[in-house]
Image 1 (cartoon, protein in one colour):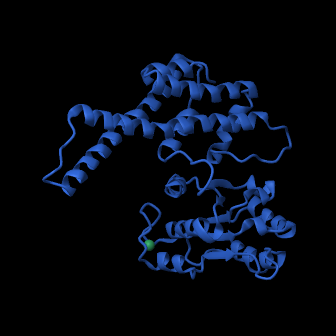
Image 2 (image 1 turned 60 degrees about the vertical axis):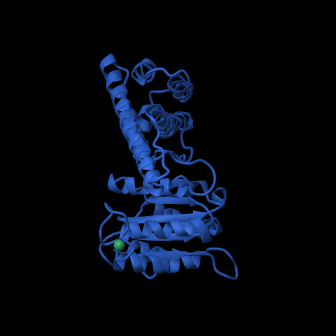
Image 3 (image 1 turned 30 degrees about the vertical axis):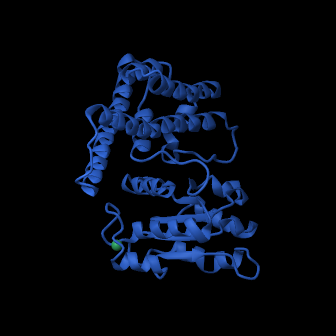
Length: 331
Ligand SMILES: [Zn+2]
């Protein structure tokens, strides 16, 4: 489940042209991390293009899955020393990364057990991450992300695949970020505009929730045509409302993550290493805002996100009332 959501994030970023240069995949490299990396390789190399799901049948997909695609290069620790040394890094990996891709499309550099990079190989790799080659994605799989150099981590978007927090589902994550990126409380009109965008997301979620329950009902009746008793209207509504609440969680999490990023950016001292953000693709917007919003206010916004959730989900207040009310206080 986490993996599917993480995959959604990668796919949406790719479609929006906002793919970062590198991801840290937090998962066992021999298990979920490596598998996820192969999935992303197929996504980028499938001959049907990134708009579709990888077909699994074309030459690009097959070679990506077998690990024989010339535009995929994998680096892993040497058997004896169990580290990824400078020789392996400089010998073939970085020169390969600097070259044009074989097929004219994406190149993917995979580092399995990225925590085994030593100082020398980390620093050599860092230079490439600082000036990343075009159309090249790096995937660093590790189950010990804290062992990586902070300077490397700060240049990667982090995807926790098997442990830790689950990123909010797409497309809601990006939609919320876009609404908040455009937000201003300079006028009541602007506040209403943000509230309307968030309300539109809720409306869409309502439609999806009803569709999902309808599909479940259909599946259950087809499985047992004779014995199945369809739910009455009240039960159907209750099921749909429950599903809707579940889906809306992604909106609140994204909302809170956005203001956590603002908080991080408004509280880093000058010269500190680049922090790891939930929304690295919106870094410029966030950084610009962080210059105007002191940390104590950003912290307040994180709390407001939780208050918005409580008012809507616990007190059952209308979002069309709650959003404009709270957004008035948010710069
Ligand atoms: Zn394919």
